[in-house]
Image (cartoon, rainbow, N blue to C red; front, side, top):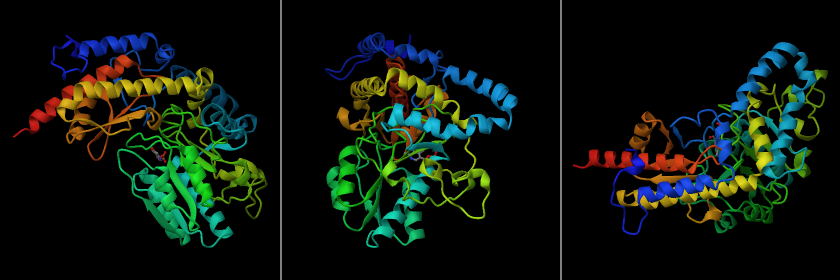
Length: 431
Ligand SMILES: Cc1ncc(COP(=O)(O)O)c(C=O)c1O
């Protein structure tokens, strides 16, 4: 008997597991993206994957792309590959990210470095520009629940450049509101650094409104798009972003350590000087001149040799996203998170598990966080059974629902396993 069939007494009025299983099947049957799941390696096993928002599954076609690259491009073209295609790749893939994922015109996005390094380069460049234009602008605004790397970088840059950090204290089950940002910004603000989707709660910030508020205060804003790129529509140009950085190994399935992308609005490019002045960002890369002269356009945001091998797989997901469109992906993402919340309410509420993500559809990204004191042990137990969510302190189990590779039935199976694990852990903790 599968976990879905086990007889249980649900909360009064809540759907029973059998009814939820029927609902999951019906949702899969009517899902226009359902067939895409088969294109991912591992989707034909019983493993439940709830961590595509940390490291996406690989596409089958990426395995062939990587193999043929080694034989034909690397093995066949050798060093000639740089002139023939690799030098242009960071910009070509950047423009595809711009078109398919972040709503930007060409010439403003490049793929390079890790997210952390790109964040450092852009936040520091933006701080220096703002401070040079107006000495009173000494503050970098960031929220206390932003991803650790963003917070640590902001502290480091403020210390390095004689600035200050202005913290926005946020509730961990939500994120930065318009009122929060209005209160934290003013003539002293140089740069604002926010995440579009909060890594812990999944809160989806109102990026357009918050960008306008930062601009009204005379500040520049940098958006961390790691948890939204590939799951939530973004309109970087229309919403007048200044700067943005995002990961490619989450919803873009680029593989472990695949490089990040950086967006710099065309209107700022010439004025920004990024601090890691390497030869790949120079105006004439092979002139090997005595001093650094930055290139025009996005090349100036490069530093060293681009990680070409790590840029292969993400091209397959970008092609898939261009094909189906980010709006269809968002529709499925909303349906998946709504279903997960419905199952959590029906099966987990009585066990003391709460939903620590926004219930309002428009304020929720692609993952749902479930809160319970036993979640660390629950996560460890689930991994042993091939059910893979992740854990974030304090007591948060994240259910990451990658719209291209996750089915509703997989979601239900995983949630039933969470229920069983919470029950077992809770019983073990009872005196
Ligand atoms: C929101 C967010 N920002 C920044 C990072 C840092 O990325 P990296 O480790 O690739 O530098 C991550 C990594 O998971 C993240 O989730």
